[in-house]
Length: 134
Image: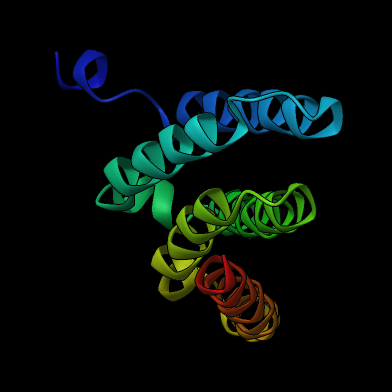
C-alpha cells in the first residue's frame, strides 16, 4: 500500500520532466500559462523534497536548475513586454528556489537574479516617474 501512496522516484521525476517540456513549449510560443505551470512544478518539487529517495536522485537537482532557467526567461519576457507585475512575481519565484539549487547553479542563478532585480528596479522607477509627470 505504501508503494501505491508514494510513487517510485522515476515516475515522479518523469512527471516533472513532462511538466518541464510543457513549460518550455509555452515559453517558446510566448503563450500564457508558463508561470502557472512553473509554479505547479515548484509545488510538486517542494512536495517531493521530503522524499529522500527522490531528493537524492541525480536528476532531481537538474529539474530545479531547469526551473530556475525558466523563471529567468519568464522575468526577461515580462520585462521585454512591459509586464512589470509579472516580472516581479517570476523574480520572487526564482528567489524561492535559490536555496534548492546546488552550489554552482545557485551562484549563476543568483547573478541572474541580481541582474534582473536591478533591471526591474530601474523599470519600476521609470514607470513611477512617468506616472508622476502626468
